[in-house]
Image (cartoon, rainbow, N blue to C red; front, side, top):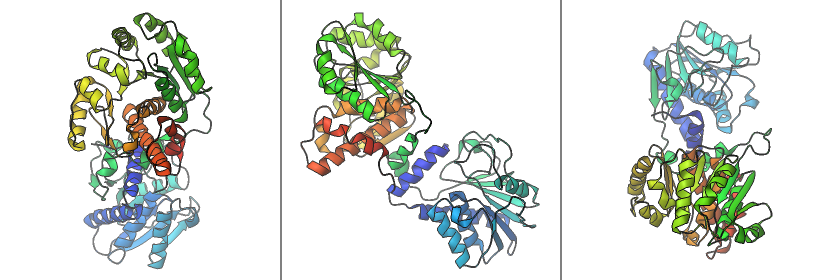
Length: 480
């Protein structure tokens, strides 16, 4: 198994939310690095620590503290201490000063002199850094490569892309790499790698948490349309469901939300919000003769949600089947449309959002134990070749490979319409995120919004109450 840099950042943040602090993890990382140095160094050997200003450098500071006393340790910081980027790394730099361990600040690329050490510990650039190294980091990499010493890198060799293994300009030629928690994809094939268990609980990967929201950062130079055009195909017997879904998509960051619905209810759907773009079709419900025009419209949209408020008429289900058979984009399938999925052959990428009863009607498993359900849902998702978001007290998300579980939400959310809101959030996120990530974050945000409403007013919430809380659930305070 491997873990990407972005996913590792999310897991770190999730661990902190589970009360496993960054300080604890940094202590464990530094201890693992120190053990690796002890494996190759003799008592009294010179150990040169070259550190950057991020948490990679912080790990190296901790290692230096563990090694001091048994080895001749010196630490070179590339930059000014006041520009160290995290509080915890800064604290560990200060700990070196208090312990009177030899340190120097390197403010000029020509000023670094690591001497003739026996071991070099490379803590310059971490997994989140890509592209060609700048100065003084580049000169530090050259110096480490020129040293007649055993070089140990922290997490990944500085200058190497952790996800691809590519080197844009120059990278540390490490003799050994100590990477944390799990192997980084770019290290596959590297000859000498230790994967160190630093105490991140399995729950930080299994349960969706605040770290997963890191993927929602936006480019300040973004333009209209960059964050999704969502099309909701719904309504007929019901009018509120497609309106809730489309409004939720907008609240979750989609740039535009379209509702394709029967002409007789178009004005009613439009009346829910002036922000919706309503595209009516002739008739009182979705039928096969509408499919061609809907496919044409969907071609210009990023994600289609099909199902909210459609009803279960036989000709409506035939229309859903025909649409999915010919659609090749991304689709969120909800409500009565779900029953079509097991029997349809489609090139579309599907996220299906059933509750337990709807999953059973699809031929899926039932279990009251969330761990057993997670395993069974994963197997069923693999059979369907789709991503499933199975709603419950513990939501389970799986594509048959990756499986995530969400624990936000409360019993007040059994009210009708909360699933329509979830479908809209999922669609908005699916415009820019991979399927499992989109569904996982959507479940987390939907449940968080429900928790806020119940905390403020108690039970008796309406699905529409969730809409105003969605932005805060996604982009509100993330510090843990």
